[in-house]
Length: 501
Image 1 (cartoon, helix red, strand yellow):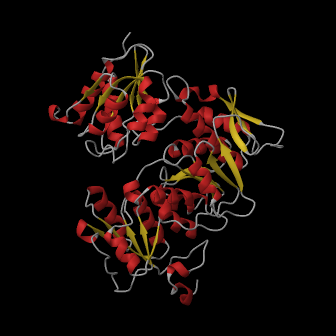
Image 2 (image 1 turned 135 degrees about the vertical axis):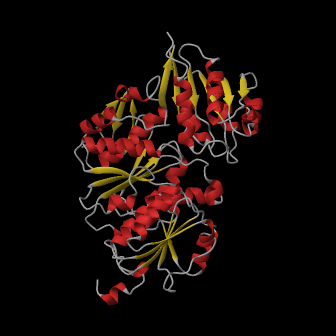
Image 3 (image 1 turned 120 degrees about the vertical axis):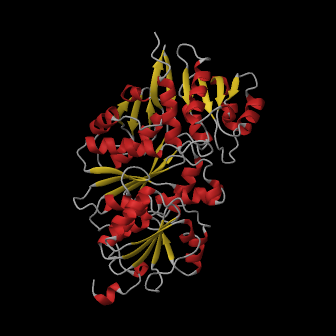
């Protein structure tokens, strides 16, 4: 660009292939994606300031690296309370914000009031990526998106596609989009937080797996949450996938502004019609991208292909995730044989229906990632008899529907968390005869001891073919650093029981 062109404020510069040289960018949040944003824009000549409340050792070390390259990194809560002044006194062109910052954060409100555009990393990456850059296969949903994206990555790699999982999982999207060697496709996981600040997504194909109640405090209500999820469809070029069993996903698609000719593809666990993916007997079937979808179907896998993904075979929600991953891959031109081989090679990520121990025929399953009632329901549905470890910060969620629907499969319930009341109230109403115990944190020196007590209590109720399931239906922040620590301590406690006979 010429000097006159680089004097144009960043939001008005042309894209794709956005030139950020000379632009004044404020990055809010200095985590993994925040660091990547500063690094990638700094390399390309932008003037970058980043703010973060945390002065953690890792933040301080990373700040030193980027400050030597010319970045301005402001760490400490005092720097996040209001819109900082730019080092040269000029206004910022844009604010690129972390998903963790709520829209009502004072700094973001001040930026909006000052007329400064607020972008997500996704928006910035879309603008900066060149027109011939990798195609985006975008996935969102309340539950299952990480599984779908990592399954999709496995399929694409098996097909010989230069692909990577990115976004809310894997690489920061901006690194994947601007990788100098160039990817052909990005399996992109998107949270509602990221989508809230994104206007120009334009994916090759996109999917909403489901829309359930979650993060309503961040968005301000269910309508705003669903509206953010729906933005994944905006500008989609080839195929929009929706869940036939979730009418919210269909409504989102019906209201979406997509590229002319983009197809709507239904996904379900029932027999598929034309332009759908589904199940026929024990086969995963494509009636959308086969040669003649009106009279033919393509077998893409069978349930045995996925049998390694659950203690009693793949549970229904995992099968549905596989169908979404397969449909996205097929929309990109991947042949059924590579879909099947990619699914067979796939292994679930940590803390997602992960079998961490087996003792005397009883599987101990870590689904610590199940932080809301919908995801816990999916995990509970994987076995007929479950000793359930649950509890934590319920985030105001109503647990009555979950426990009413799952009561018949509950052999016993072990509660963790500082306040078990949301669970005990629902259990009183819908499963009063199911044995339960609360691990009182006042009786535990630390979270390790607490989890060991929880697992020992759960093990006292099991018999052959039961599963002990950690699927808390709640956030971990009231007792643990994060869901990963909660899951790791569960696995440690389960393995300490020994292997049995």
